[in-house]
Length: 387
Image 1: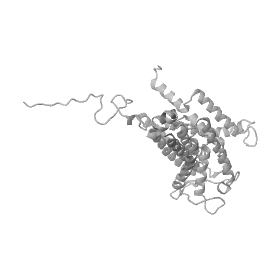
Image 2: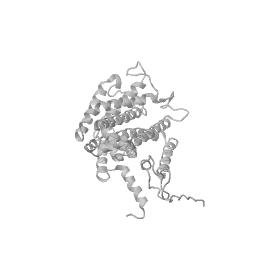
Image 3: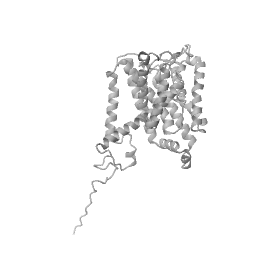
Image 4: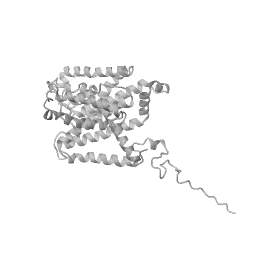
């Protein structure tokens, strides 16, 4: 007799071979890689793709003034992501973000500036050279500060990083060969890519359209890099230090190494944001890097959502789009002045408003705009069954 062997087919709900999602259960994962995917559901892939396409389409749909505001918001979002890495993911409170933004801005301006002029300049106008250099110089400054900061935490660390803002403000005001001095300033870095000036109208579009597309592209690159960092071994070490640094040290996480790394990466993002931010206006002045700028970045992170890349982007867009509204207050409210020498003025109103928004979000929605989005999404996913 011939023996017939039969192979039992695997049940339809049990995956065979390579791990995949179980049919009929799209949110049930069968591998760690699926759970840690960058975009782990088809809905996220489609919505993210549509959002990116709409953002690029705005370059031909909006007026130049609106594109200029959005380009600045994208750059501020890069800086906010950097602050979120050290504060949100690694749990190290930093109030000195404006100091590293200033280092990046002046590094880029010095490399891109014309040689032999009144200010320091080396004539390197290519963006792909001065942008990484601005980030690396700021990262080097962050690594130098980090060993001192790693010995502190909480309020003491906040005070130390806050001192960097006042120290940097004094240095940049006195170093006139580099900065041009207070009230004078100097030209910002030239956004030139492979010989094409992006701060001038050209065959590819207006100056605002080119800068909008450039800043949006760079924001996507920096955001994806930060999200991948959070999913990596380094990101998990940051989270362990943030949640409980003593417990992280017990399980073998080298605290000093990862705290220094967090400051270095955060400073790199801040330096790149500083190099890009003032290419939009074409002018950089040492008085811009004050405590208010650090407060703005903190407001972006807290209002958008701590320890989330999308939250940092949402917070930066929220604060940036709020500024045109506050700057128009003198025309609507007579007793608010646009002159900084008078009280109250729009800049004082902005500072009070940022503080008020931070307090309100911390009390009523600690997860920020990201938390509001999660609430809305969960409501519609469970509707009409609210329980």
